[in-house]
Amino acid sequence: MEITIDGFARGMLYALLGAGITLVFGLGSVLNLALGVFAVIAVIAGVVVLPTVAHPLLAALVGVAGVGVLSVVVDRTLLTSVYRSTGEERVTLGIFTTLGLEILLSGILYVYYPQTYAIPFDGNLINVAGIRIRSSSLFIIAVAGVLLLGLFLFLRRTYLGKATRTVFQDETGALLCGINPRKIRTLIFVLSAVLAAVAGILWSIQSTLSVSSAFEITIFGIIVSIVGGVRDIRGTVVAGILLGFVVTYANYYIGTYFSSVILFSVAVAVLIARPEEIS
Image (cartoon, rainbow, N blue to C red; front, side, top):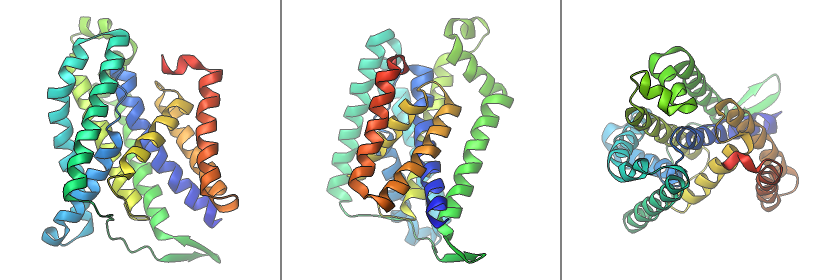
């Protein structure tokens, strides 16, 4: 049971990362390879301000807010030229732009923040009916669950959410309805970065993160998005949860190396069976 709860928690983290990839790629055909570095920046920022704010929750909020501001700057500067292009050119330009951003930010962080970092959390074991469960896993499930539910409600019930889905389905039709796709893309890019930031914060309460973790986090998000469907939020969330169980059980029974092999094998199998997922 303990492994199942931990697997569910890992799956919720994967779901947040996958949703971050799916939102931006599904709406703007931009594969955000800087997703992982946003997650790491949130953790580092939280740790840096922790002595000042004197509370882990406030520090985490500062880290998430900082990533939100950074994502606005990135979207309104670097991604402007990307969104002016179309089709395969946009996909290619988006990959190189976000990859360059990831390399730049990681290089800067390596110089000034080369250590490992984590947001402090009281991760004691809780005994429930004789079953020992990590409180950190329950916290991750609760926070990620609220965020994902909020994301679904936002997309389904609010004007901005409906405008977002309209742009997803038909950008030309959205323009005719008076919707500004560029502003919607900015909103979604910021939302994607915030999801990554929260995922990074939650990840760090169970294990430390470093700058080198950024690429790994991005890869997790991409794999989950591919398996779930790069334009399907619900499919991505389900895929994230299922892969979280698979990786956790594989880690426990056959080792970390083989769990990574399984994760990549699933992604490759999906691409072979459904190559249209990345089109």
